[in-house]
Structure formats: structure tokens, C-alpha cells
Image (cartoon, rainbow, N blue to C red; front, side, top):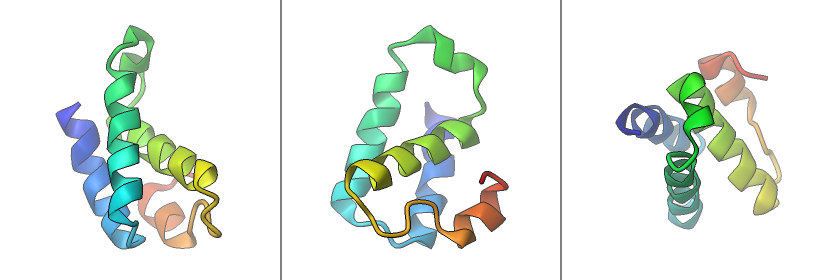
Length: 75
């Protein structure tokens, strides 16, 4: 989990995510710890997925900004 949070922190700073959404993202990532099947995914992918999910749920205008595409390589 520590590695996932290490990836999440700079990603959310890049997009200036609100503290409320950051905490929700962290909570979702913590929930992923309860399911062993998530261990097969890279921490950077889990962090990206958490950010994407929160942006989608909270109806953020730009769900996956271009800056994150450039930094993560995930589209």
C-alpha cells in the first residue's frame, strides 16, 4: 500500500485535486488491500485507477487530464 500512496501523492498534486477527493482516493486504495487479486497490479496503475474513479464519481470535468497521461503513460 505504501508504494501505491507514493504514486498517488505526486499525481494528485499535479492536478491540484481537492483534499476531499484525495482522501476519498486514499480510502478506495485502502479498500483494495482487502482483495488479494489487486496484488497483481502495479502500484502506479492502482493509484491512477483510484484517481480516475474518484474523478468520475465526483463528476470532475477533466476525468483524466493530459498531464497525467504524459506522466503515467496511462490513457
